[in-house]
Image (cartoon, rainbow, N blue to C red; front, side):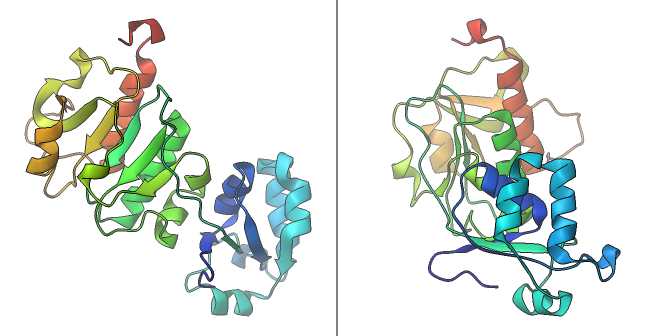
Length: 247
């Protein structure tokens, strides 16, 4: 079920749920009987999930889902999701809203698709103004969408051609072990929070552009946090800071 004409794969019920909830244009959606449900009707199983987890989407899903056999789904999707649901949707990469006071997450040359998807999920949940990436990894890759549970439509997600395309007017906070302890810092409105890869950290070019270097508190002897964990810590710090204390 490869994307055609600019379509991306939504793998699983939760990815389709979030995509629909946040306004994705879904071209096609299919449902096969989940392995745990035996010969049950595919859309029926998916609609039972919707009744429990997303009653707001029960009507749209009932109209959208097309039943297929488990064998057909395996032909369409290399690794079918346990929920037996898959869909194609139009990608919607877009820049963060320029006037939003919420932070924007910048990932410099991320490589791990699952980590990137987890960052999208964290940023969407925290209400970040967007996620920007650099490098060759496509932030709209199906594996990223799967890890993000379809939350790409809940917050802007796009890839920059390079550091010269960073959004103007946002103070750049770069996460670096030599920076000021995050707990002693406050983030200015519209902060751009930059994270390097777990293996190599920030590039010298991005580090030199930073207005502020911030360090995450870490026990001695531990080399690094998972990328999504680092982003979650920084965004939680922003959320936990009273609004009137944000300078």
